[in-house]
Image 1 (cartoon, helix red, strand yellow):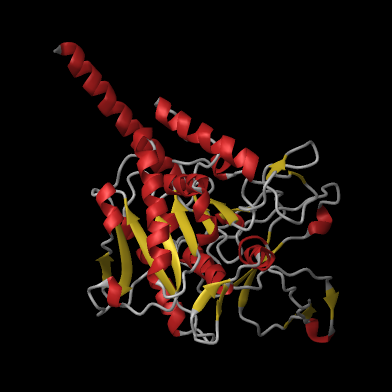
Image 2 (cartoon, one colour):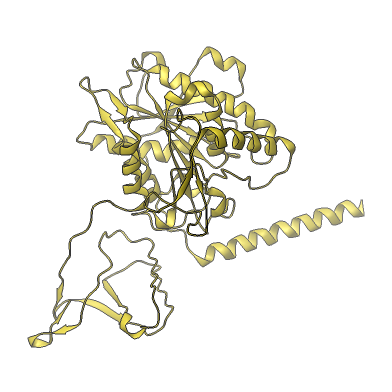
Length: 424
């Protein structure tokens, strides 16, 4: 009795230690993600299909806001399908932010493109701790891809968004060879792809090993060497392993890591040698911040970028039906534009400030300097960084989070004009 009490006490104390440590870590950098708000009441319509009898404990849902017919068979869906796969202890309701932003964007879209979001219910199973769930989830995901594709008059390819272990399940579903033509792209959000976060049983190990064997034969992969690193993009000169078969090469894979705020899946685990593009949220244009494991599915900055990419790879035919682009090169170009580096170059902007310009100018002589505005900016703030003072250094690093402006970094030469006006 005393022994059990001591074990419980130690566990309780250790739990509080982890909670305190987590609190300390989060205090280092405040969560700068903006919340996503729904304009209408979120609704989930459960789809009924005969194959569901094989997995009666799982479910497939269609997301909508406002009134809609209560039978999916009578719905007239003309948008392009997106299928959300939740992860360890995840809920199908986590699709709300992604789907709601897509609905709002469709209302203000000159190309008349719409997206239809579907989500899988895995009953919040702990798939990251017990590998026995993974095979069933993979097989059910295969069925859902077929069901979603067949809903439309013309069978459409599907874009899959997998969060956490849901991304790994989405990667493993590629082992089902018949589904390659129905999968257009896969976006992995904070997913441990090549290596599990924790390996507690034989089933998890087997699941990863089998998937690795399959992908190593059928999918091109990066080969790291001394001149490259594991975080690569298509602009770098990297070598590839050419697969024996190219029938699954048309599927675009994009892996996204949350960064230092994600205490559940480290950034190194979100990188996969089989992904076409990998990006950390802190380096994605118009995101520029680190997301923790849960906020990555509702962080407005990231949710907007993901939806912008999906809208960019969608097109409308003569019947106003929406499909995804089949040519992978165009999808890669769009992914590079939204997740890595904007393809359009900014023009040179000339700025002139006179003595009447109301703003705060600050210059720091420190090599390492940080500035935090907890309550936001009440006026213009200009931070002067005189690089000329540090001629011995070859590289300069700057990180800015929570900034909405597109133009925020300017280089200039100091010149003086009449009236003591400073030209930049």
